[in-house]
Length: 494
Image (cartoon, rainbow, N blue to C red; front, side, top):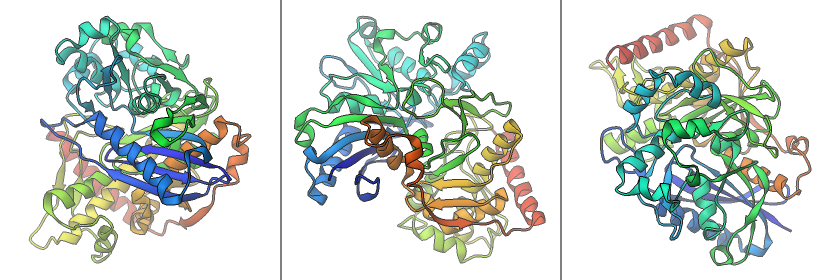
């Protein structure tokens, strides 16, 4: 018996999941870690904290199941995307805190760039909307603001990576400096169709090419871990950004299939096959994960704050001690009492891309209860996701037949039923809602040839529950009209 180990490094925790040869999860270990907010809109984390949390989770996972590293067939890695690290090539020490994907410190630079003659070329080549969300402006900021960084980068002394690249560097003691095409497509430095770093984009952002990792496919044997980390050398054979990994874990391999991951943020992806999508509704084009560098694409919409809205109510206001309480609290009231919660803590993502927007709880009255606000926070996740799917419908002219849901908040029956009602399509929850880690395991198995094809993987997908829409059309429109009004108020006050 052999096992597949998935390292799932998220925004606020690092997890390790173990799968048997049939891709059945037999255990998960998680290590939460704190983010830091040194200024308004800034979000950062210590790269060494990420590494320590991830390797500790992996070791605990193996110890808990009595599995040795020699029994691991391969490791698959999946990670929070766009988060930017720079470290010394000689020592592996970060030269600054990692700038997290949510961070808005480069928003002013991106606004200026979006008004420049470069805008069209950048967006056409990358498939992205110019925004502080992506890695390029974060990397440029580090080079410009950390003393001596630009000179050291020009001298070839530094390395850049998203979190996947950082973990692979650490796992291999600096032998491998690489990323996969799905993560590279989120940097705003890669030509989306060519699958390689673009020289003109590097000039625009003033990034030395020596900083950048090699771009690989999402499923191949990249190399092996150093034996000291897990007890033996283990092949690393899968790598994908978390949302592309979740799309893969949901076996959305055919054009038109859509998944939505309910995590810290919310991310809806529609597979478009070998056809590069072009959005007219401010969605982005990205590379889908796969075992080839050439052409698998997805259309994506990103919500910056989803489950993080619930963490906000817990940590800042003490509304509850456990996020699992929210499902019960939301159902103790018949509705939100007219309350709408727009959690634009770090601006609004797709389809608005308004970095200066800020959050709002609207509709409070003397009769508003804690349950109304909690329910409004949960409903905000569904409203924001509905806007993404609506943009996909407008871009493609087709309505998805169903939405496949995953991520931690997908455990909420209330949320998924409300999502089905607001979208007016079924929402399907698989047996394994940890699709991100599962996708990494699938990719690792595919990379070593344990799984022969994506068709073989489709047989593993199983439905746990299907949520059918039951809301009337008039009620749906009334609620959506209230949400649009709340969004309009936020945008007018940005």
